[in-house]
Amino acid sequence: MEKYIDVHTHVNLSAFNDDRAAVISRMVDAGVAAINVGTCRTTSERAVTLAEQYDNCYATVGVHPCDVVATDPDGGVSDSDGDGGGWEYAYFKKLAEHPKVVAIGEIGFDYFHYGDADETVQHERDIFTEQIHLANEVGKPLMLHVRHKTGQRDAYNDTLEVLKHEAKVLGNVHFFAGTIDHAQAFFDIGYTISMTGVLTFTKDYDEVVKYAPLDMIHAETDAPFVAPKPFRGTRNEPIHVREVYKKIAELKNLDEEFVRAQLMQNAQRVFGI
Image (cartoon, rainbow, N blue to C red; front, side, top):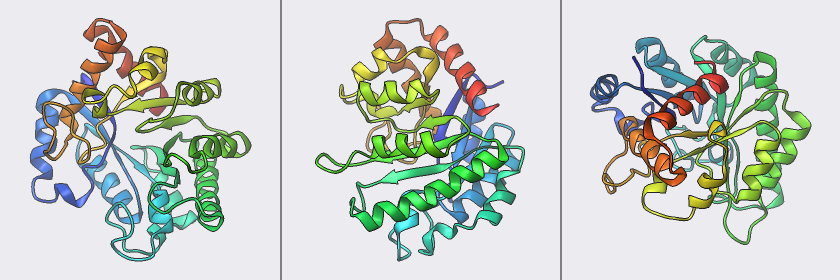
């Protein structure tokens, strides 16, 4: 029985090609379930395949904003083939209808990698909007990616604007790195936020965690990226989500078991798991 859920991970990426089964076996032993998040056509297909193969794996399908913009095979963030992530409404609708696909994503805005020129922003906005419409049609929540650099236009505000006009479903802002005001704006429209292992080695987001209602946050790894302490410098994997649970409990000065149970309830509520 699962005791923990990693709401955003990428065991579907090629970083796990050599030992994917062993990684998932460790998850089973630790009582960890995971949502493998699609970033393009290829990784979305892999996420669905893993969900079919393993009881403790779920999937999202969608095209990451970096893969929307990428024009070469190495330009995106995943295993994209440089064709804009392979976005096609009808194709992703078929994937999204799978019963173990629990969200559409990861989708949104990323100005960090490709900047915030008007043309780039509009292209990301167009595909983001189409994917929101898909989520509306299939009735599944959004898994959001939102990132910008200091001095750029605010990707969180741009995301909120699009959601308020287009979304008929709820969702989650993964790897939340915004302000308390940003967090509250998402809470106000019913959206949750998820925190990563970054919490274990920086205090930048401590106040956001302390501020957020416990029923509006999740824990994630974003593996293979950002391994938490004491695993920094190694490839991250879903079992390390336990360190994020522990840190959230510490920051909120709450019992670890109470936090674990509530975060499981949150994932069940938002993603229907």
